[in-house]
Length: 434
Image 1 (cartoon, one colour):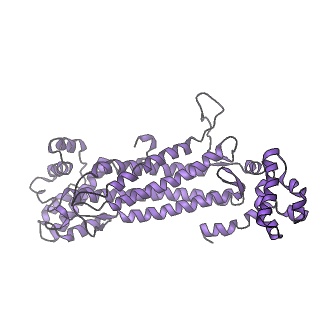
Image 2 (cartoon, rainbow, N blue to C red; image 1 turned 180 degrees about the horizontal axis):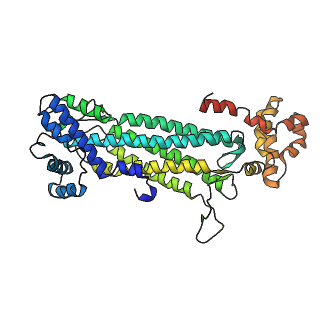
Image 3 (cartoon, rainbow, N blue to C red; image 1 turned 90 degrees about the horizontal axis):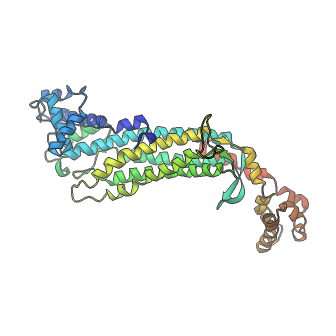
């Protein structure tokens, strides 16, 4: 990804320097295990570790690869330049390139997951704080973009918290899904390498041995991982869309923080645009873009082909870097979001009590009116609010068919806002615990 949408810690994880360092560790741990089994001399394994502080020369490896046309061989050649060709002759003993490449990819995905989980924790903390801050801040709920019934801003934050908490649980499961390594040799049969080597390397690298691999680790694991990132991206967009709606001038129930000196438009000095949440919508599209290629990587020829390789070289870094950036951008937006409770009440009262229509409908049915007649009576008066700007309660009190079933006091009671917020604490306890 471009630097504009990247954070240094995640970028560093996917750098060539980090990749070659992981390759070295896998090869060195494999040598240790081979020496313990008596397959290679112990001094050769120890010689490999003497290169542990070496800064591998990326340009030199690229130079070798330009000739060999093979990245792992280029690295092994460069490693031998530091260790010595005789001492390094047992490096990669019984292994195949995929053992290094696939195990490294999974190490990177696990480490990327750890960074992403930190980002999700920040988002969750921000959502929880704002949920409790606005637990009782009443606003209108909308269906189809149209006023429905009252809710609270706290419930809006709480439902986003619950959604992101599910996303975190999915990411933890996805992290576990890709936390495997394979050091099983050509076509995965362990013919030239003992399974104990795989067990040792995986233990040292924080992985589990892949139960059965071919020459590659099964890509259904990676498909699940990237699909999970896609779902999290959609949850980010879900929150962003809500904020973008709330910031519309005719709504203005909340807006992104507008910092001193910030400009909204090159042409119109009055503008304050939801640029961060619009950006999050775009980033979500980029993250989801990796899902279909990851799914298509599952089907490989026989024991190995490399049709997945070019895909993963792109989506591995790009998707995790983008999601990492998006999570922290979202957290910042939520942390600084400016909320306007007065505008929420103003918007809710724009149609003069219309949002209480269901309460009146239910009261009429409770009073013995058929549902069909009750709906007709309520809708008849509601349409006067839509079409003439009338006051809903006033119209109901003037309707003899309505007052024949409900007293003025009963009608008045149906306009109590507290009725709609009486179970907020129950919902909060379900989301956040007691």
